[in-house]
Image 1 (tube, one colour):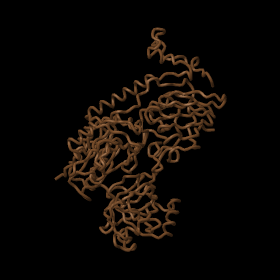
Image 2: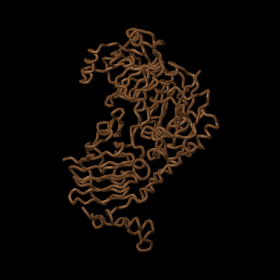
Image 3: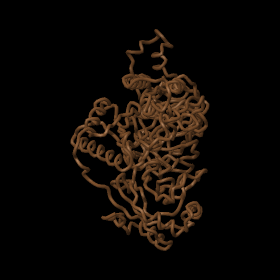
Image 4: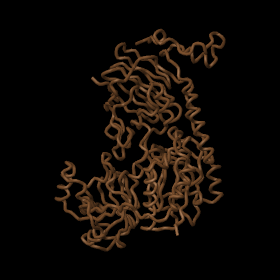
Length: 248
Length: 362
């Protein structure tokens, strides 16, 4: 049975296709599948005028150019594509192992999070880095990945007062999600470490390192390795593929 | 020597903006671009550029600029006056709104505050020689994208111009620019109209809201009678895609109209979305302005796009040659029937450039 999809209007140049009855991995899979079908149709010269597709956890937002696309036609075509049964996902996501230096200097909330979770800092690090996370979506800032699921003991609500400046590279947690801030920005998540790998580069073919459907695990590194990696990455001595792994 | 423009004083929130970069929402990259693309288009017409060539955007207070290395023709696209200081003669001449002016090397142009609306543009004949990033020159400072070094313009910045910029022919003026005041925005209800009761939706459409001081390129926070979501729906949504114009209702019930630099996903319910034909108005809203929303259908939104294009064409039909400060703009006067019956204006479409373009002071 095809799952019910509904279309929600988002002005006259976009709409959101939502799978309201699905949760978690199943909804993410359906969103990726719909996205791939739309991209295939677009590559085949159909569905002219789609200018952007924004993937979220259980929805896909389709942005169109009103000068070249017919809103009703695109909407009807996408409803049809969603009903098409069969076709498994063409490509699976990539798997990454990202280094993280978990220290108080890099993760200002490390002691408080450990205390709130009633864990030692070492146990906290073992828990956070012992998990494989799914990239749910990219948003908030260019390249900012929302990843789940944070192990139960580490799930804390967001800070009551957001920080005005979270340093770039900060690894953070809030509720069941973990993230890395690609840019210095305000932020309300708990900071527990820092990752030296740049998550966004406008000059890469895929500017965002991560994409929805990717899987990420973290590897704890010390200050020395962090500094070495940071220098090597700045000089492009280390290819980003070095952080990709075949098996999660 | 290449022609450049040096920022002597940056005014307020001064940045390079063009049409923005659509298509990168999937990577979390906002669209950015001019908050009032209509004003940018008209400004580019003043200097003979393509409609969405990048220009200098500013809010409320314009910058002071100096031409270096060559002559630069600049278009002033907003309701603001400016002063042109000639390096050679030391003469200071007033520049009126919506006109072009050519700066010789060393000349400065000081733009005053915007008297109507909130956002203005300085367009530059031939365009800016900055490398586009992800399809645009638009500045998105939070992620260091585009513009000049990815940042807001500041004093002593030097904007490189395309060296082949032509600066000949008559200056231009738009005699009848569009009205920048905003009182109403047309919206299409949704995507989360069902998060609100019928009476809450009616209240949203019947209320008058005031733009708060939190009004910028990311969005406009409004103040008014709070709009509350249904208790069983709440103000938390599983995050989904956003576009400029979407109207979020957070827990305090005060709407936020998202702007061109808005984030690409968010988790507040959106009661309605401003239609594309009205998005340019968001750039002209200033704190204290009062606003109402009007619900329209998709078909009406499409008609309003055509109506907007007609208004732009009408404004462009009043793009006349301009003979410099103090000179009477005869053609504009003829066409607005102020000198009715003296000369048949339609038989004299464009005055001869070589005779009428002599500058009075430079």
